[in-house]
Image (cartoon, rainbow, N blue to C red):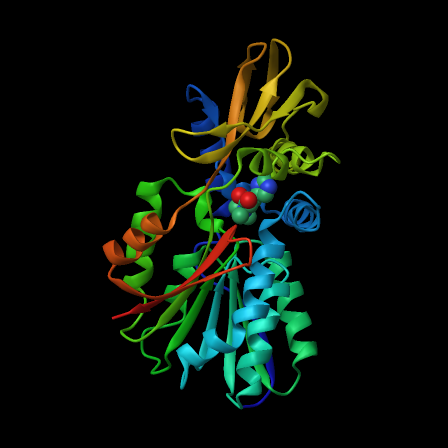
Length: 329
Ligand code: AVJ
């Protein structure tokens, strides 16, 4: 296969600006106010998330890297003789993916790597760096799109079996109902025999969880505040970040870490591109994220409800995180 680098915009990104405006109006009109987590990831937000993954407190990324380092050979053996296409949903900087890519290449397999992400910058950087690193042996086709638009743009005609990576416990941002629907749609967009590897953060000591989302350096706080900054940048908002605090408690009922931005005073914030202002009472919160924590029975019920067969769960040595390998049967 010739070496190639391609970055495509799948349909669905064209109306992105309009969708952001609509979702901001909708979210800030709710009670309690909320903003969708997917808007964290503009260029600045993706950069801040990268910094989070390097924090001592944020164990998730290191646990998953350990899982992939330890079990790459077994994971690769389980998906052979395929795949001819390695798809990654929400690729980030690809550090963890590199481990699997090397293993797959070591088997002599020639395949295509397809990172799909809504952050244009992430896809460009990742596609370029993988293209350089594996020059000649890996075909890279980056797609800037929401996941299902990206998957649909791959085309159903191809005869290539796929291996889809959905790492990092990104699924944690979905409610359980949304996650069930997500996995069902994912299975519908795959062919029989295709594999998926899904990362899930596991339930654990609440103090470890609390620290992971309330780091001493305050990077998580900046990550959350970037959502308001993004409204300022893209919709001419007038949020003053000094007037909002970060609050990150664990919700036991839902088994998720919650992130809130809390208004420190009564305030009125104009968002000029929307032609209106939003008022905040002192101590009123904007809910910006849920990061769900799972146990194995939940993971297995997600898989079976969507029509996947669980091949195996892979763990780090502390069992803080799981990568679960499923096959579309
Ligand atoms: C990228 C969604 C997996 O929920 O742990 C990190 C995002 N938020 N710190 C997570 C995040 C605050 C992260 N995910």
